[in-house]
Length: 337
Ligand code: PEP
Ligand code: MN
Image (cartoon, rainbow, N blue to C red; front, side):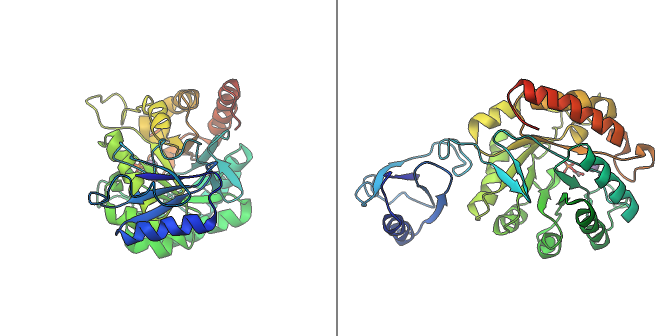
């Protein structure tokens, strides 16, 4: 249910509605950025008569939301959500590119890549310090040491830091270094982690579970939103299909579909989505052409020596070329990069 306030409703009216919401045992989420104030009511509303809300001063109408996700829905908020990542904006007219290695390997590596991707126009640096690996014997990331190297790269380049959070136990530690928290595909249904990042103030990149439907993906986003964090970026990163030609199947058709269903920004990860270096550039252009608000890409100066995900890493030179070509696509559809 959303409560649409009258254009002239004042703060007193809004506070009164919030009191009423709490009185009936529900929780309110005040939605900003719309021409009039809108309050989403979360909770069990079965015992509340339909005209209960209409009688409250300042209320224009109460509208039931039919989708299973509420705050994420375009029905609740028409305008695109723009997310500030330090001093840069992702969403709306702006397309933002996040780039860096799969994993932080050492200080020199991350500094070198940070400088390279910044020069080519990236808005943020990615790099895993805690890595979710299929095998317990594979490199698991440098942990806090990796976070320290990322922080040093931010200090040197000014780039915001995007890094994965694997567990709600790490929320304090990772948040003390990161500018953006990444929830990976394997954790999209870790509801306690979604709650924890929802309580954090940092923007979150939520990657689609590799076997999640769009509704499940949007509901995972709803977990974060309903716990108070409005800064959610959805990331399509490929799904599991019968196809073995690529590592995953990059499902680009979900981009316009998500843009229709939600106001949240949608980015694409063609590195994991294909797992194939030569496909990263064409699929990046494709992603922007179908309406993605950004890209997240794996870049390594020497992919052959990359600790993790070498076959899908592109060099800094290839990244610079990708940026130029993708920018031309962005401009052709009236967007800025
Ligand atoms: C990553 O970004 O390095 C990563 C592990 O991504 P995903 O969760 O999409 O596999
Ligand atoms: Mn990776």
